[in-house]
Structure formats: C-alpha cells, structure tokens
Length: 116
Image (tube, rainbow, N blue to C red; front, side, top):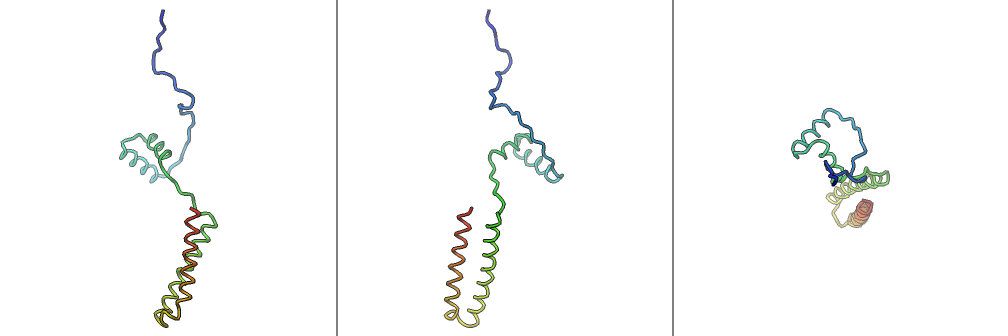
C-alpha cells in the first residue's frame, strides 16, 4: 500500500515565520501604513516585510558629524562676510582670505563625504 502526503509540504526551519514584533502606531502613522499598503495592493504585513527588506534607513548624525556640519555653517557665515568685504574694499584685498576659507570648506566637505 502506498502512503500519500495530503496537504502542502511542511516548510523548512528558515522559511517559517516564527518571530512576532508588536508595534504601537499613532493614528497618522497607522493611516499612512494603511494607505500605502492599499496603494501597493498588499496586505499591511506584506507591505511592512517589503519595507524591511527593500528600504534604506540612514543612521542619525553622530556627534562628530554634527560638529562638522556646525563648522561648515560657521564657514558659510564667514564666506558671506568676506563677500561683503570684497564688495566694499575690492576682491584683490580679500583674495587670500577667500582662498583660505574656500580650501577649508572643500576639506570639510570631503571629510563629511568620507564619513558617510
């Protein structure tokens, strides 16, 4: 006598969904999820799984990066002051100050890009 397997084959251990995560959402977050899942024609759970697997979340700025951005903002302010001086006194007298600051800004931007 031959035995037949009835029903679907059992899943392997790595294919089973055995972890559950409970998330509390505000009303706006819930309706945003609901709307986006409907727009994608997916159940909410499948939409969330797709987001987890296919999205890219950038990490928050660390203190060092925040410091670099603050320095860059200060340099931008200095550059505006140099431009004002250049308009008043002429570019030739301010040129060396401008070149130094422009070089500093370029170095700082390179540092920020490297840290990303």
